[in-house]
Amino acid sequence: MYQTINTTIENNTLFIYINRPDKMNALNQQVMAELALAIDEVYKNQEIKSAVITGTGEKAFVAGADISEFLRLSPQQAVELANKGHMIFKRIEDSPKPIIAAVNGFALGGGCELAMACHFRIAATNAKFGQPEVNLGIIPGYGGTQRLTALIGKGKAMELMMTADMINAQDALQWGLVNHVVAPEELLTKAKEILAKIHAKAPLAIARVIKCTNGAIDKDIDGYELEINEFGACFSTKDMQEGAAAFIEKRPASFIGE
Image 1 (cartoon, rainbow, N blue to C red):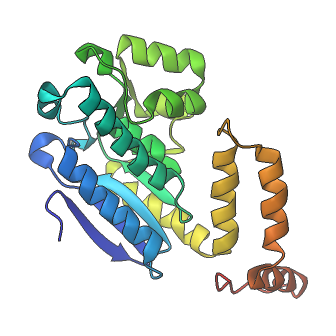
Image 2 (spheres, one colour; image 1 turned 120 degrees about the vertical axis):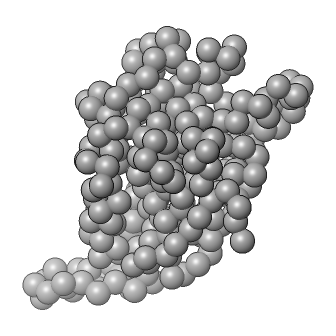
């Protein structure tokens, strides 16, 4: 089905591998199109409760965009390309099911933007992050200026994007860009461990946490009002009744996503 990504489902998690190791898993239009299809599968397939995005090989998560495609773009075509990228990454960000980036190497340019579109990030010790677009006379085009600023703050984001420097996994952890740093061989194990905890929670509540947390950085949304309304909506669910009953009865809850 796919030529530039691989997918497997394990324990209700869809693992998406960007699979262009000879190109350091660089994003081209075909990768983006196939990634969009995989994300559609996350939304539609009831068997899937979460997803992990990572790269094939040991060197790169995604080392950037395929620059060879840029050379023939007009300004209008570049806008269209950026719009497509924004739409796909927003679908990742807005997914009602958790999507984790397991960063197994270089996450530069579009790769860093892809990682930031995920709900949170786990990095291998050899991971490197950066937005080096100014080296090419351009800027991040898939939401990087916005998400990087939201994650690490304006000052650090400005410096990172204007110098085109890379930061290592430990700096990324200290700056708040990633949640955990683990040995490369433990990367997917850590993702599975976290997702096992999330899978045990109420799926509709998880979806509402994602929606409201994203609302905190959406200038068009009153995040507090959104939270109030989503809190109220939880009380119409069977899972809320089950969760409250399980708490009172001192037993594990059994959620059904209704």
